Image (cartoon, rainbow, N blue to C red; front, side, top):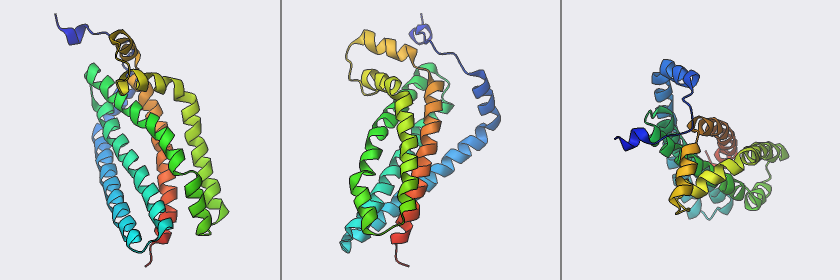
Length: 213
């Protein structure tokens, strides 16, 4: 008896999604690899410019580049885990990567509003940026909050029981694992990634203006 084959999951394979993926698999992989390279380059730049700002004691610039670097690291982790989730065919492994994506999104939905909260607003006011900048950022933050509200209970159950291994009861873990739908997680991931990219691109428009030519 094959224990892996006998372990049953409740989700059904999304045939339409998988057929589309098969048609565009090479371009998808190429796009994800390019995205990884861009994010790695962004993170490297954030680290270097933040360190340069430290030598000049420019606290406002330090915080701006720190926030941008933080967002880019989340995006890089998401692309890495998300790519594995989408391409994986073995069910247990696919559910594993879905759990990692859930954990990333759940934690990011808490962390991003904090790093872009009161302190970031103070810095924004200190450097006298236009009000429109913060209005646009607040719109993106509301999009993030909408994702959180619509998916919080689903993400929390997975995160608390199996993503972070907080529940040590086998029955509880197995039940949640069986009921995870990786295609639902992918849908949430796409919505979150879009919002994350909007925030990152917007932060970058401010960050680059702090660099002296």
